[in-house]
Amino acid sequence: MLRRVLAPAADWIARRSGVTARDERRLVRAAYAAILNRDPTDDEVAHWAGRLGEGTPWARFLTLLRNSPEAAEAGASALTRLDGTVEISLVADDPIPGAPLRFRASAADTVLLPSLLDAAGVWEPHMTRAVRALCGPGDRAVDAGANSGYFTVIMGALTGDAGRVVALEPADEPRRSCEENVSLNEQSRTTVLPFALWSERTTLQVRAVPWATTAAHVVTDPQIPLGVGEVATDVPCTTLDALQADGAFDGGRLSLVKLVVQGSEPQALRGMRHVVARHQPAIICQVNAVCLEALDQGPADVSRAIHALGYRMLMLPKDHQRAWAASLPAASEHPQLGLREVTDLAALIAASPATDDPVDIVALPR
Image 1 (cartoon, rainbow, N blue to C red):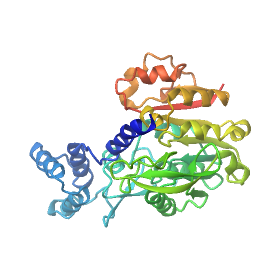
Image 2 (cartoon, rainbow, N blue to C red):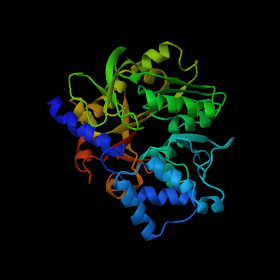
Image 3 (cartoon, rainbow, N blue to C red):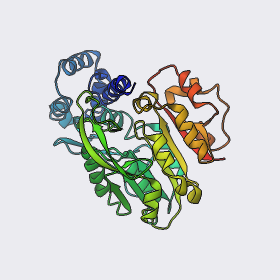
């Protein structure tokens, strides 16, 4: 079974990473808005979308646009540096108090970068709102599946000099980006670790697409063929309980765990029993049925792991999921986040309008 389902999981990751499919028109509009401070004409969209579809690299398109005479006349741009990376101000329309947050993304990134350019430095706005609501000054927070550090940097700004952030990212390229972004914002109370989160300390294989920021996932059978564009690396795995025993949280209270680990969520949840008993943190957990199936498990395994911790599940709907989620009873906690009570996670996902659309959950103590 595992060999059959891994291919759909790899295909899903590839689509999310822009490897096999891209919304070229959206990329063009985002770049024009950021670099030229205007919307492109229909002819410009058609021209550049066609060029991108024919294989012109995204980074090459950005360079041509940035070096155009019109860009020089436009003045201010969202791009403050372009030598293979792009620097952006995060959450620019609703900044976190303190110094502006700086973030560098690869110019070749066709997933995270267009979203940041298109939405004033915001990625996954529903989850960004939740992170901002669930941790604050002096808190400890964990970013598991940190990728290039978008949420890591936001957590670092929210928790401040009296707090602490622990980020875990096993894939080399996004982890280096995460470390750079933490350093760029001088967040000395943030630690970036090269671990995958699991149910025990062990070594497992992680597959990743090097030029993607959202594609690393654990594989328990290294004989399974690689997916599109993937490379395999053996990485150390750990648990939140082990990190706590090692003093990672510096004696403070852990208020938030963000868990987006491409199908390893049940294992990660089973490895945090002592942390939950001591700290009772809020847990933001992504439930991706396709990636879960690649590890021979499903949404019901996530439910069991959450219930075993003494927690209940609330759906954190993406903006495009709000109509679908409206049939669920509204939760009383954090009404500004649009949380909805979930009693049967597997049935909820089975009823999703898009079968490969992940569902994000906020788990809170009962």
